Length: 250
Image 1 (tube, rainbow, N blue to C red):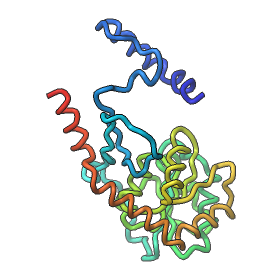
Image 2 (image 1 turned 90 degrees about the horizontal axis):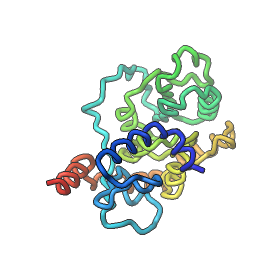
Image 3 (image 1 turned 60 degrees about the vertical axis):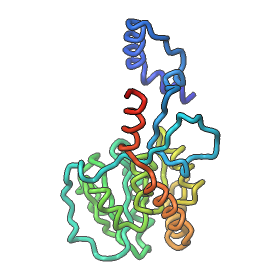
Image 4 (image 1 turned 30 degrees about the vertical axis):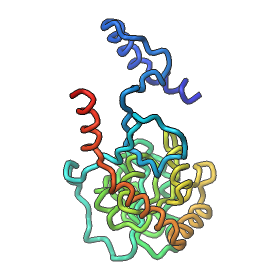
Protein backbone atom coordinates (compact mmCIF):
# COMPACT_ATOMS: atom_id res chain seq x y z
CA UNK A 1 0.00 0.00 0.00
CA UNK A 2 2.81 2.41 0.88
CA UNK A 3 4.48 1.86 -2.50
CA UNK A 4 1.14 2.38 -4.28
CA UNK A 5 0.62 5.72 -2.57
CA UNK A 6 4.22 6.75 -3.23
CA UNK A 7 4.04 5.80 -6.91
CA UNK A 8 0.77 7.68 -7.33
CA UNK A 9 2.13 10.84 -5.70
CA UNK A 10 5.39 10.61 -7.64
CA UNK A 11 3.81 9.82 -11.01
CA UNK A 12 4.92 13.09 -12.68
CA UNK A 13 8.48 12.44 -11.52
CA UNK A 14 8.39 8.86 -12.79
CA UNK A 15 7.22 10.12 -16.20
CA UNK A 16 10.21 12.45 -16.49
CA UNK A 17 12.60 9.69 -15.39
CA UNK A 18 11.07 7.29 -17.92
CA UNK A 19 11.42 9.85 -20.71
CA UNK A 20 15.11 10.48 -20.17
CA UNK A 21 16.12 6.91 -19.42
CA UNK A 22 14.46 5.86 -22.66
CA UNK A 23 16.17 8.71 -24.52
CA UNK A 24 19.57 7.56 -23.26
CA UNK A 25 18.88 3.85 -23.85
CA UNK A 26 18.97 3.01 -20.17
CA UNK A 27 16.99 0.21 -18.59
CA UNK A 28 13.48 1.21 -17.57
CA UNK A 29 12.57 1.16 -13.91
CA UNK A 30 9.70 -1.26 -13.31
CA UNK A 31 9.38 -0.85 -9.55
CA UNK A 32 10.49 1.60 -6.90
CA UNK A 33 13.39 -0.51 -5.65
CA UNK A 34 14.94 -0.47 -9.13
CA UNK A 35 16.10 3.10 -8.50
CA UNK A 36 18.55 2.02 -5.81
CA UNK A 37 22.14 1.98 -6.99
CA UNK A 38 24.21 -1.17 -6.83
CA UNK A 39 27.33 0.98 -6.50
CA UNK A 40 26.45 3.06 -3.47
CA UNK A 41 23.43 3.81 -1.32
CA UNK A 42 23.99 6.69 1.07
CA UNK A 43 21.77 7.35 4.07
CA UNK A 44 22.07 9.99 6.77
CA UNK A 45 20.91 7.44 9.33
CA UNK A 46 23.35 5.86 11.73
CA UNK A 47 23.48 2.08 11.93
CA UNK A 48 22.76 2.17 15.66
CA UNK A 49 19.38 3.78 14.91
CA UNK A 50 18.38 1.08 12.42
CA UNK A 51 16.66 -2.23 13.08
CA UNK A 52 19.08 -5.19 12.85
CA UNK A 53 19.25 -6.63 9.34
CA UNK A 54 21.74 -7.44 6.63
CA UNK A 55 22.93 -4.54 4.49
CA UNK A 56 24.90 -4.83 1.25
CA UNK A 57 28.53 -3.66 1.35
CA UNK A 58 27.65 -0.59 -0.75
CA UNK A 59 25.16 0.67 1.86
CA UNK A 60 26.71 3.60 3.73
CA UNK A 61 25.52 5.16 7.00
CA UNK A 62 27.01 8.66 6.97
CA UNK A 63 25.07 10.33 9.77
CA UNK A 64 23.14 13.61 9.56
CA UNK A 65 23.93 16.45 7.17
CA UNK A 66 22.68 19.40 9.24
CA UNK A 67 24.88 22.43 9.84
CA UNK A 68 23.85 25.41 11.96
CA UNK A 69 26.28 27.75 10.16
CA UNK A 70 24.42 27.49 6.85
CA UNK A 71 20.96 28.12 8.31
CA UNK A 72 19.21 31.45 8.05
CA UNK A 73 19.22 33.20 11.43
CA UNK A 74 15.87 33.12 13.22
CA UNK A 75 14.90 35.74 15.75
CA UNK A 76 14.03 34.25 19.11
CA UNK A 77 13.35 35.85 22.50
CA UNK A 78 16.14 34.08 24.39
CA UNK A 79 15.65 36.59 27.19
CA UNK A 80 12.29 34.96 27.95
CA UNK A 81 13.90 31.64 28.83
CA UNK A 82 13.57 31.37 32.59
CA UNK A 83 16.41 29.00 33.42
CA UNK A 84 14.21 25.98 34.09
CA UNK A 85 14.79 22.74 32.17
CA UNK A 86 13.61 23.30 28.61
CA UNK A 87 10.97 21.19 26.87
CA UNK A 88 10.94 21.88 23.14
CA UNK A 89 7.86 20.96 21.09
CA UNK A 90 7.33 21.12 17.34
CA UNK A 91 5.19 19.29 14.81
CA UNK A 92 7.46 20.32 11.94
CA UNK A 93 6.77 22.63 9.03
CA UNK A 94 4.23 20.50 7.12
CA UNK A 95 1.78 19.00 9.64
CA UNK A 96 1.65 22.16 11.71
CA UNK A 97 -2.05 23.06 11.84
CA UNK A 98 -3.04 20.46 14.40
CA UNK A 99 -4.32 22.89 17.00
CA UNK A 100 -5.63 20.16 19.29
CA UNK A 101 -2.15 18.64 19.47
CA UNK A 102 -0.61 21.92 20.61
CA UNK A 103 -3.32 22.37 23.25
CA UNK A 104 -2.77 18.82 24.48
CA UNK A 105 0.99 19.36 24.70
CA UNK A 106 0.54 22.59 26.65
CA UNK A 107 -1.92 21.07 29.12
CA UNK A 108 0.20 17.95 29.63
CA UNK A 109 3.18 20.12 30.57
CA UNK A 110 1.41 22.31 33.16
CA UNK A 111 2.63 20.34 36.18
CA UNK A 112 6.07 19.59 34.75
CA UNK A 113 8.85 21.64 36.37
CA UNK A 114 10.16 22.86 33.04
CA UNK A 115 9.63 25.66 30.54
CA UNK A 116 7.73 24.67 27.41
CA UNK A 117 8.70 26.26 24.09
CA UNK A 118 6.40 25.52 21.15
CA UNK A 119 7.48 26.17 17.57
CA UNK A 120 4.53 26.40 15.17
CA UNK A 121 6.68 25.73 12.10
CA UNK A 122 5.27 28.71 10.23
CA UNK A 123 1.77 27.29 9.97
CA UNK A 124 0.03 29.84 12.16
CA UNK A 125 0.61 33.02 14.12
CA UNK A 126 1.63 32.71 17.77
CA UNK A 127 -1.27 35.00 18.71
CA UNK A 128 -3.63 32.16 17.78
CA UNK A 129 -2.36 30.30 20.84
CA UNK A 130 -2.22 33.16 23.34
CA UNK A 131 -4.50 31.29 25.75
CA UNK A 132 -2.64 27.97 25.89
CA UNK A 133 -2.64 26.34 29.34
CA UNK A 134 0.49 27.04 31.38
CA UNK A 135 1.51 30.07 29.31
CA UNK A 136 4.22 28.37 27.21
CA UNK A 137 6.53 30.38 25.00
CA UNK A 138 5.04 30.07 21.50
CA UNK A 139 6.88 31.21 18.36
CA UNK A 140 6.19 30.97 14.64
CA UNK A 141 9.66 29.59 13.95
CA UNK A 142 12.44 28.61 16.32
CA UNK A 143 16.22 28.25 15.98
CA UNK A 144 15.85 24.53 16.50
CA UNK A 145 19.48 23.52 16.84
CA UNK A 146 20.18 26.23 19.40
CA UNK A 147 17.16 25.24 21.47
CA UNK A 148 17.92 21.53 21.29
CA UNK A 149 21.33 22.26 22.77
CA UNK A 150 19.49 23.59 25.83
CA UNK A 151 16.61 21.08 25.90
CA UNK A 152 15.94 18.27 28.35
CA UNK A 153 13.10 16.86 26.24
CA UNK A 154 11.88 17.11 22.66
CA UNK A 155 8.19 16.53 21.91
CA UNK A 156 8.23 15.84 18.20
CA UNK A 157 6.29 14.54 15.20
CA UNK A 158 9.27 12.23 14.61
CA UNK A 159 10.30 13.74 11.32
CA UNK A 160 13.72 12.39 10.41
CA UNK A 161 15.40 15.80 10.37
CA UNK A 162 14.21 16.77 13.84
CA UNK A 163 14.89 13.30 15.23
CA UNK A 164 18.49 13.21 14.04
CA UNK A 165 19.03 16.77 15.26
CA UNK A 166 17.63 15.85 18.66
CA UNK A 167 19.88 12.80 18.90
CA UNK A 168 22.87 14.88 17.80
CA UNK A 169 22.51 16.73 21.09
CA UNK A 170 21.57 13.69 23.16
CA UNK A 171 18.01 14.89 23.77
CA UNK A 172 15.41 12.16 24.48
CA UNK A 173 12.01 12.42 22.83
CA UNK A 174 8.31 11.84 23.10
CA UNK A 175 7.19 11.12 19.55
CA UNK A 176 3.71 11.89 18.20
CA UNK A 177 3.98 10.60 14.60
CA UNK A 178 1.46 12.02 12.14
CA UNK A 179 2.14 10.64 8.65
CA UNK A 180 4.71 9.69 6.00
CA UNK A 181 7.90 8.18 7.44
CA UNK A 182 7.15 9.45 10.95
CA UNK A 183 5.66 6.20 12.36
CA UNK A 184 8.78 4.34 11.21
CA UNK A 185 11.12 6.92 12.71
CA UNK A 186 9.09 6.92 15.93
CA UNK A 187 9.36 3.13 16.11
CA UNK A 188 13.14 3.49 16.02
CA UNK A 189 13.03 6.10 18.79
CA UNK A 190 11.15 3.58 20.92
CA UNK A 191 13.31 0.60 19.91
CA UNK A 192 16.57 2.38 20.75
CA UNK A 193 15.19 3.48 24.11
CA UNK A 194 15.73 7.15 23.27
CA UNK A 195 12.09 8.03 23.85
CA UNK A 196 8.45 7.04 23.85
CA UNK A 197 5.72 6.96 21.20
CA UNK A 198 2.13 8.11 21.44
CA UNK A 199 0.13 7.42 18.26
CA UNK A 200 -2.16 10.29 17.33
CA UNK A 201 -5.18 8.03 17.94
CA UNK A 202 -4.11 7.59 21.59
CA UNK A 203 -3.01 11.14 22.25
CA UNK A 204 -4.63 12.85 25.21
CA UNK A 205 -3.42 14.84 28.19
CA UNK A 206 -3.09 11.78 30.42
CA UNK A 207 -1.13 9.58 28.01
CA UNK A 208 1.17 12.44 27.03
CA UNK A 209 1.82 13.54 30.60
CA UNK A 210 2.69 9.97 31.60
CA UNK A 211 5.11 9.63 28.68
CA UNK A 212 6.74 12.97 29.45
CA UNK A 213 7.22 12.06 33.10
CA UNK A 214 8.73 8.68 32.20
CA UNK A 215 11.23 10.18 29.80
CA UNK A 216 12.21 13.00 32.16
CA UNK A 217 12.51 10.91 35.32
CA UNK A 218 13.96 7.61 34.09
CA UNK A 219 17.65 8.06 33.33
CA UNK A 220 17.87 5.35 30.68
CA UNK A 221 16.11 7.53 28.09
CA UNK A 222 18.75 10.24 28.37
CA UNK A 223 21.52 7.64 28.51
CA UNK A 224 20.30 5.97 25.33
CA UNK A 225 19.99 9.32 23.56
CA UNK A 226 23.57 10.14 24.56
CA UNK A 227 24.75 6.76 23.20
CA UNK A 228 23.25 7.69 19.83
CA UNK A 229 24.77 11.16 20.11
CA UNK A 230 28.19 9.54 20.46
CA UNK A 231 27.50 7.27 17.47
CA UNK A 232 26.55 10.30 15.37
CA UNK A 233 29.73 12.11 16.40
CA UNK A 234 31.75 9.25 14.90
CA UNK A 235 30.18 9.63 11.44
CA UNK A 236 31.40 11.87 8.64
CA UNK A 237 28.11 13.41 7.56
CA UNK A 238 28.05 15.25 4.25
CA UNK A 239 31.85 15.11 3.92
CA UNK A 240 31.77 11.32 4.11
CA UNK A 241 28.92 11.23 1.58
CA UNK A 242 30.88 13.43 -0.83
CA UNK A 243 33.98 11.27 -0.43
CA UNK A 244 31.99 8.14 -1.31
CA UNK A 245 30.57 9.78 -4.44
CA UNK A 246 33.92 11.21 -5.57
CA UNK A 247 35.58 7.84 -5.11
CA UNK A 248 32.98 6.22 -7.37
CA UNK A 249 33.20 8.78 -10.15
CA UNK A 250 36.87 9.65 -9.77
